[in-house]
Length: 327
Image: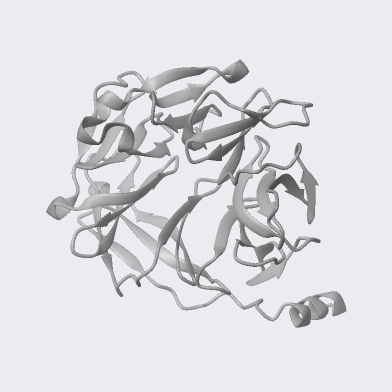
């Protein structure tokens, strides 16, 4: 082990080995004969106050939001600090080339900064903000959008000032075809076009009783768009954006969180307790998920990076979803 690495491990006592213990979630009655497992990827050094992001090579990044600290990366079985500065991280995003974008503050918390993160260095993007975005994504024309729970700020290429977008973004994702999609409470799901204009893809009226209160989960590799609604999951083909595919959950459970990657969707639902369900690409029914041990109490996070892998976080646990079997 190098002297530099030993010094880092002494300076940052929260660095820890990735836990070898696997927590396995198995599906029952999975469609297409497939199953989904969620195995332990890492134990986290804290049980709350953290943010998960992804590096250019899709490895997870870890930031702390309750206190100043270094950004850490899962490397060779350990969480290692990789940033030169100590900051509070409130959100991660990415440019079109996969470069991480970090929303961060400092111990004073007077202003919020947005910066690209490469080779351990945070490079500011524009002037600081008074608002606290949760993510930053880039349009194919180079414009960056900072999403802030119903508001968005945009930074045009070469500009130094973030301006208010006319699109009321609650969530934004980059689709597999590279387009930037945003969920709004005024128009439903829109595709963000050049010059801060938008084209409606799925109107709120197509989502049944939950309407604009639905949760947009993402888009799979076939262009199918997924939403968690009061009465289950609804999906829409790109060629039929007003005709929903209804996907019910067992036992009248209500989805509380959902995320979609190109090949898989994971749904967190609640009835008398929280459960996870898997929905592979092209499936019309969910695969019931049975835990070998109950999920603990506490908020549950779902995360996906540029390679389409889905991660599940809760308290000090970070798991990675894997499809097994299948046709």
